[in-house]
Length: 99
Image 1 (cartoon, helix red, strand yellow):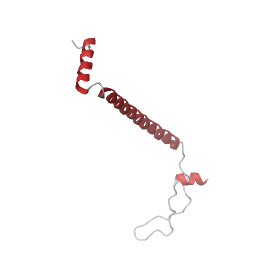
Image 2 (cartoon, rainbow, N blue to C red):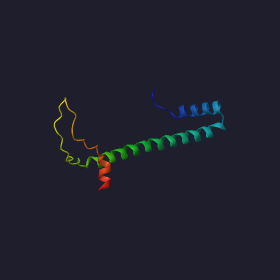
Image 3 (cartoon, rainbow, N blue to C red):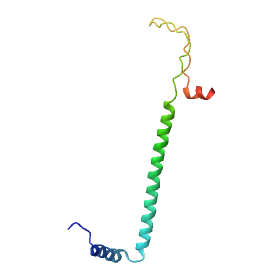
Image 4 (tube, helix red, strand yellow):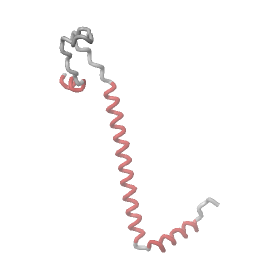
């Protein structure tokens, strides 16, 4: 009962030709093919983007943390402000590029 028989396909083709006409069916099939090509290309580009992000994450996982800066800091008490200025934060990517 659930099997698709050859005469089912023939009836479907006849109904499609009667509904849309013989001239419009090739155009519809062409536009459907274009749409499927666009969808395929977009999904492939999304997968490539995911792979690129994974490769970047793997490459960054190999970096080692920077050694601590040698800035002597006195203990902070709430009554007084710190006496020595704290070194500004260093961007690790920029530091690697500079070396």
